Amino acid sequence: ASDWSSDVCSSDLAKEVAENDKRVLFMVHRQELIEQTSKTFYDLEIDHGIIAAGIQPDYDLPVQVASVQTLVRRLDKVPPPDLLICDECHHILASNYMKIIDKWHPWLLGVTATPERLGGVTLNDVFSSMVIGPSVGSLIKKKNLTNFKYFAPKSSFDTSKLRSKFGEFRSDDMLDLMDRQEIIGDVIKSYQKYADGKQTIVYCVNVEHSKHTSNLFNQSGIVAAHVDGETQKTERREIIEAFRYGDIQVLCNAELFGEGFDVPNCDCVILTRPTQSLTLFIQQSMRCMRPNPDNPNKVAIIIGHVENVK
Image (cartoon, rainbow, N blue to C red):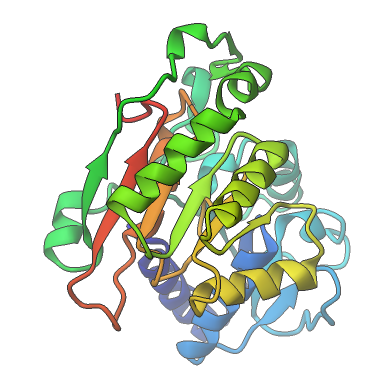
């Protein structure tokens, strides 16, 4: 399901469990998702504590929203939950997640739009069953997601030149192929042809590639910005807000806004990061399909420059 509807379902469950005098902990893996989830909880009138760096905790509240990175450092301080809800649970086999689960052994619910990992690794060791949600097609029919148009312009990009490591393309090979002025120029031309003026997120290979792409958009007269995981928190928040309000048209990043990032006014995504991961492809390509109440006739635009759709 869309990230927002997933949050609403999880929040409703958390509220019901808390009303039965049980403790619930909802854990996410990025700061933006803490703020987004907390807002959803408040919108649904669920009082909750937040376990994250720089925020005063209130462990007495029966519902908590937690950053995985902070939670794993405070395991001896946090009261054990009866129900642990894991957002984007395809990450759950990572060591930090497993430390949390092994500490408490709670009832566990995982939510994700993409229950798949590279290399044939499965989630069976953690979860006993999977409840399959509605298909993308049915979500579009119900207006939970927008319809979309997918464009795959011809490019000099050639996947045969990419080597693989641990089931994914090597980052150095991707950078050599994609971080060239003529390739980025093709990306800008595609934006102007298929999505001119639309709020767009560009997924890049790495920080260097993202910065170069942002600079060339700006040189072409299109207001763009780059953000990454190391961008100062205040600056990152300001850039994201400027994008939300349309002051920035194009937001370039390297794997920062693939999961959970919720911007209804994002009309277009451009894929310039090759991947062999179905999960990554779905997370990135569908980021623009969140309905926008201010634009009820919205049709999302997906521009794929790296043959991921194949």
